[in-house]
Image 1 (tube, rainbow, N blue to C red):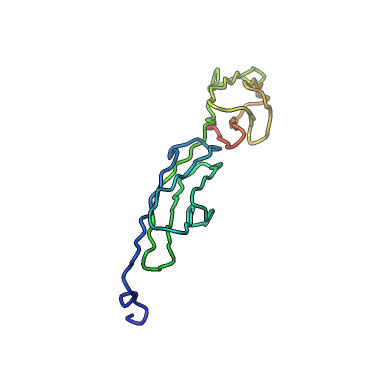
Image 2 (cartoon, helix red, strand yellow):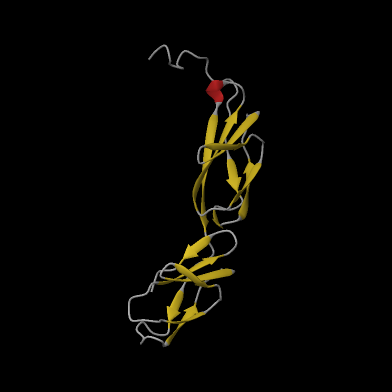
Length: 169
């Protein structure tokens, strides 16, 4: 282990301090986040998103199109391996489209119409499914169930970037 140790290397003569800020850390999918670099003592930079290098510029930005949690890491370097430092910011991305609906009734005789009222938020497109079969793309939905039985009705909405699926009634 002593052969692989960095303990015998010279101390950092010109230390670096990695530091940056994000324009936002809780965002909706499709948002551009700007990262402003306030590091000192560095001559090179590496920006990582969940461990994947995405930039080597002094300042950077990234558009987040998929909901989830992202760890942004800035590594500040100056050519001396003993002077490398890092800073980290977490970005949380959510989908603005939420699929929600109610029905006029939960039980109906065959042939009678059930009215499904769309209460979705932030969506621009809508697709209704009955027993996993696409049935309509209207905002609200009316359906006449042909026979006695149990039916699954669901709604898939999108805001153009991300999609949400309703709970099945």
